[in-house]
Amino acid sequence: MNREEAWALLCEYTQSENLRRHALAVEACMRHYARLWNEDEELWGITGLLHDLDYDQHPSLEEHPFVGMEILRQKGYPEEVVRAVGAHADHTGIPRQTRMEHTLYACDELTGFVTAVALVRPNKKLAEVDVAAVRKKMKDKAFARAVSREELLKGAEEIGVPFDEHVQNVIHAMSTIADELGL
Image (cartoon, rainbow, N blue to C red; front, side, top):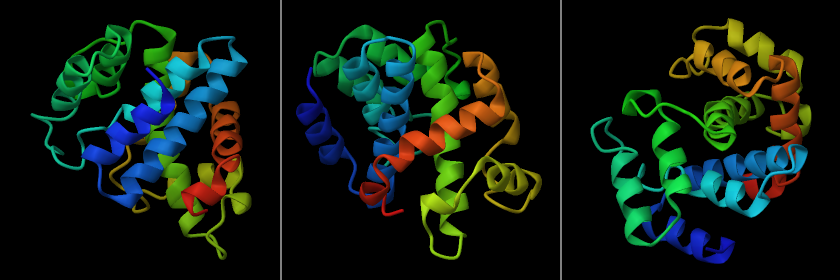
């Protein structure tokens, strides 16, 4: 299991540039937390990179992330990666048990929300986003309405990090690859 193979697999199943960027953002956040908590950075990063592997082709609740889990099993990925991919979405019914599973859940939706906040800034840059901007946009129910504010808060709670600190961690991690994210 290596990063180059994981990226090739993602690109094979994910044509959408925005979904690829989302995968990169989640990977960066997972790597950040792995370093912070002295976990396996490569394992966590690859899990973040591949978590939505099937979403481009199978976006329905009935198929995502179940198709992706099967693809990963067939490719020989460790069961802890497969399970984390399955547990990252509440609708699967797969309970999150490990720190990696909780962290993937905590980072997934928040990276998308932070990206949305960046895209409405004057210069569309991540450098213009801070915790206050994210908090302000969370209060605006019309903004990124598909994102559950409760899930954003629940994610931080699950990893035991105060929400504002989690937002700052996500912004920092994403900032390290802002050019790749187009932000």
